[in-house]
Length: 297
Ligand code: 13P
Ligand code: SF4
Image 1 (cartoon, rainbow, N blue to C red):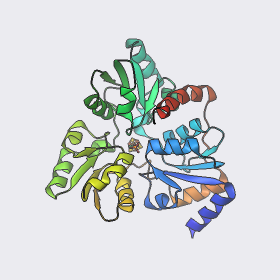
Image 2 (cartoon, helix red, strand yellow):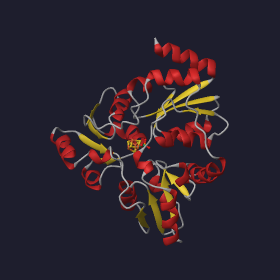
Image 3 (tube, rainbow, N blue to C red):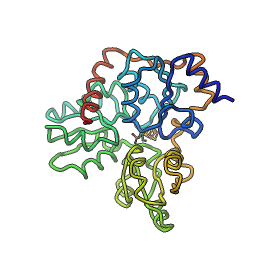
Image 4 (cartoon, rainbow, N blue to C red):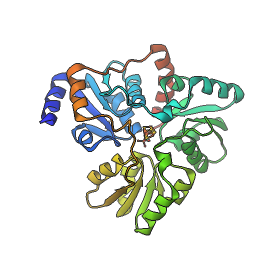
């Protein structure tokens, strides 16, 4: 069985497998740890294994390498990107800083390493409010997700949040509509959505949470409709087998779904694809990421 081969290779290589909540079920099942982007970054930072096989998308594997540069970090597929991360360039951040010299720059980890190098601090959807509240600056340039920026602006007071760019968004989460929330409510489900969803979807939902936050709060209701990539409904079903979790069929992140068990086996066999980072850029990005991680406890 391929799972046995992976376990054997893992042992031989001194490797651990980290997987995001959106990965396909088979990959979630073989992983040593499954979590949201903040939990995975912390796990990667603390990892003592020689090799980290990161089943997720590029910016997550890059963050793992930045936080634990002496480990070999492998992304089993080459083309697992994130269109949200790609919609913000470092030039756009520099231009915005020039226009708002007194503003702090908060970048969602769903951004490129080059953009992170321009940030004062990063955030994930699990800690975005806490990160913004921790800042002394009253004006915050927040990117690249405008819906997460809206969510943060609703939660914090006394700050001006400027989305950067004005309409940065995740194409997957934009697919959810008010009609999905209404259909879920009509069948008696509670609705949880990710803060990358449009504001009207957030406002109509019963709970807005990161994927890790969903796992922590799923005990609150018996029947849920989960408005985030469909892998999360599988994850929640594994964590809470006595509850039901409906996904909206067909809303998938193609990039998250690229990694298969065959890719994981090949990564362990061949050492491909190793994540490499530019030291100078990584040092600057690391400051922003470490500042975020230092906020917890
Ligand atoms: P989480 O940090 O909530 O896991 O989200 C990551 C992501 O890519 C959402 O689309
Ligand atoms: Fe990027 Fe959206 Fe996929 Fe998350 S779901 S990795 S934000 S494209």
